[in-house]
Image (cartoon, rainbow, N blue to C red; front, side, top):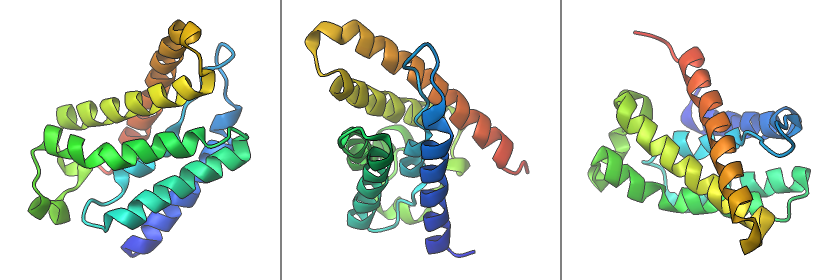
Length: 167
């Protein structure tokens, strides 16, 4: 299967997984995994940035449509899609010329862990800040961010372990 079909399959599989399975999981009333952000992690760096931002926004908007959340998912995934390059440069020390050869699974676990954890926490912090939209609920925002990030990361690393081929 070629790259565009892989990206389309990833887009729709994450959309359907989030909408029909993960949005129905609620621990302690409001802890929910948001695994759709894996699209930002796995989208190739060598591709043009404008379509990537558009697809990320479209994925978030689709999640918002099914979740009736008013654009919060679209905004939060768009932010992490936009700042992704900064963290690739920070954690992986990659230059623009290296983007064509960059693969997340080829990097060490420590770098992957830092990269994924940082973007996940940023996404969740933005999402829960807008979902609560009050300075009085900052403890609730931080707790939801922490617990949902842990749950999302657990599912991501478990899925990565299960679905990657060992060499």
